Image (cartoon, rainbow, N blue to C red):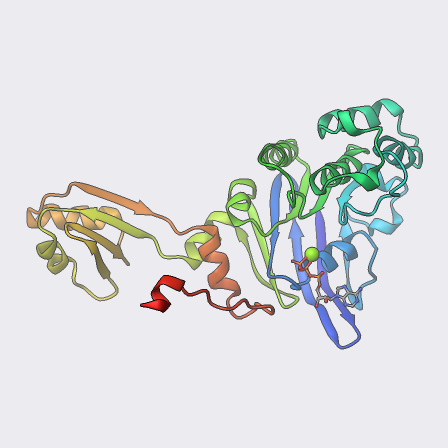
Length: 310
Ligand SMILES: Nc1ncnc2c1ncn2[C@@H]1O[C@H](COP(=O)(O)OP(=O)(O)OP(=O)(O)O)[C@@H](O)[C@H]1O
Ligand SMILES: [Mg+2]
């Protein structure tokens, strides 16, 4: 369990993290989301004592990480996968870290196998591709078989097989009762991986909720309805709070009322339905709605060049 209370970090005039409080529960994968510069990495660095909070405090399993006598067995961290001695092989890099905790060489071989870098383990880590380096960083985080995993953008640069492996691996770790905090900007991947999400924006907590609750709260469920008598159904549904759009003839997109209520209304009016499909919003929709005002580095709108010419 990770508990942050009033965590604050200023770098000169920059308020990187402002009065952030949260609890990361064991037995769940907690996704850490937020726009670029929101303060995710800074928060993670404070959790493991690499940045000293300006105010507030954070504990891992009840104590500050710095006081842990065998930190690798307590917390596995991936913050910057490039933080390796470039001239050393992946294997000697891992062996050097393992030696600080008296972990056996067999454990090094295990994490090399687990992360799939066996064929390159004797090569210089400085020559690794982005994804290979990322796998090496994950291997280092796993060395001490820790109760808590903190992974900053672990799937960044991984190929699809690696992305899926990370997803399955962290879900398995959480199922075993471990605490997992991971950041990522890949919303579709996060929606498959996380049980709970904490969203930061400009250094503050914007949301801290189970993934499905967050999506339900920040997106509208649209019900797709297919009927041969659309105008009668629109008429029957026309009450306050219900919006209906007609993307094509015979198809309605209805917001503001449940699929069950639409079915009941149609039945009462004797209107046949050929399809009734509720579609929940996505994590990406919820995230964009939630962080709209907190984005610091906004990109320009992309207009379809074909439209511009006409
Ligand atoms: N060592 C530092 N010195 C000065 N400012 C810093 C330092 N580290 C981070 N910052 C600033 O703190 C803010 C938060 O940065 P942080 O790296 O925590 O964001 P992030 O949420 O991890 O973003 P990203 O999604 O881009 O990784 C940014 O404004 C950043 O410029
Ligand atoms: Mg970051």
